[in-house]
Length: 451
Image 1 (cartoon, rainbow, N blue to C red):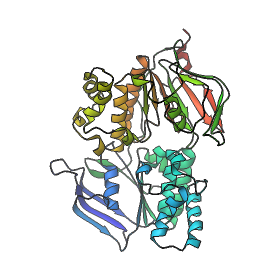
Image 2: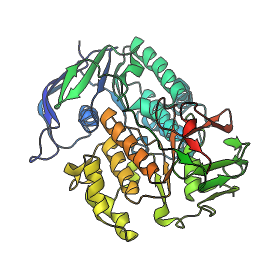
Image 3: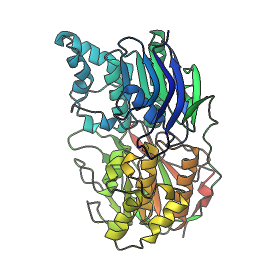
Image 4: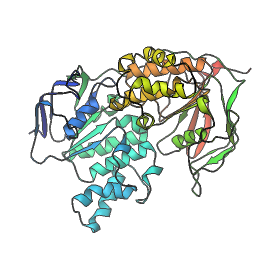
């Protein structure tokens, strides 16, 4: 017996636009795990929202649900789902609506959080969590009301390796309990031990099979002359005021023009907060012995010389069109407006120029937000998990863009949960066991040259 069946389903947002989903068929039974991959913007997230029933526009075809089907959904950006301010209250929200007795609620909340490997205080403010930790909270908030189908949007991109391992254990147990799982991801092979059926989205329909692994074209970084230091720091402890250190740096740090440095670490280690501190926008961090472009970081002092890409790109998009988004800062700083159209053409995004950035997919929003910063050709570019939501094609475009920018002399510091093998990264900074250490990759250190 199927829990959910889609029969010839087609969907589009506007009557004048082509169908995003077209004649789509899918059958989900208890205890099954289905995984869908596909290009950025192909409609994977739209499909999950359609199944969840959160899209207001009607669809063609038939969606058959068995009985009073209960579904849980974790979206790519969990920030848009949060209702309460603390971890415990968020996970308990569904239980409150189901009128679960208060004396039973606490145990259920703690159990759900432990299932996803999250060990934090119930009164922990959600705003103090990393994006990966927020993703785990939202999974727990779905598990607590025991859904019959759990929908997950891009879990691999939001979770570190240990988080993915914990998620697989949780989902394996859910499958044994008869819960069905439907996840979409650009890295489907990460869940190969769990998945019963792979599909990829092609022309709005589901095609059985798994897409090949994501590969990045061979790119070579230019030799970096270590003569222009743009970021400099003495040893420091990084912590929020009156809290234990997130990590310690026991050696001086420096970033030079033309470098691409990858800051690697698990969820919750402080990577995002550190980037915001370098940009001068992170609150509740004590003064640190560091300078960026020769200045103490402070909001508004860097102008076009500094760019910061946040993990949630929709927080940086506010214009009515994609072209307007790229032109906004160019106008603000009196830079040539033709850079916007030139960059859209280079990224093969010209067809989106007059689209609203707020209606794009998560990955496309990431590209637009990044492009609006690259247009400025900043001296320092800070990128927080810039590859989330990107397929292989978009991933190659981003790397090509970053390498070209570094050739112009921009220094780039980007964060990731994982090492980036065979990519033109100059150096790695690793946050592990409470320490920030500089690590050198023998394959790329020959590009470093002292001026």
